[in-house]
Length: 80
Image: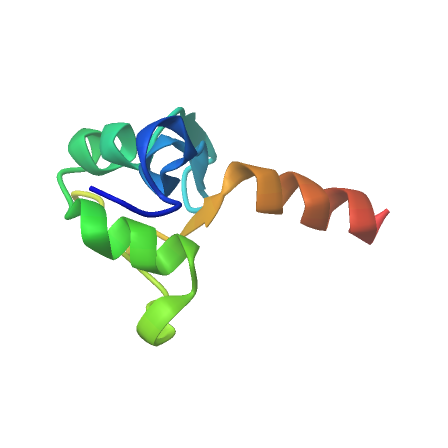
């Protein structure tokens, strides 16, 4: 695969946080496997693509929201 999103630079290798639960994952893949949701949907949610706001659900039906962890930290710091 050619392009800027290959290897460790891939968005799949960025840390993500599930805002609903507060759990941090090292990769999108780990998060999607943990909550049994589609990796592409989690990635789209993190990138704010296609107005995707949620990806996956908890057992009680609560929808999961996602964000890149680095973006989350930057938002927290700018709020201070």
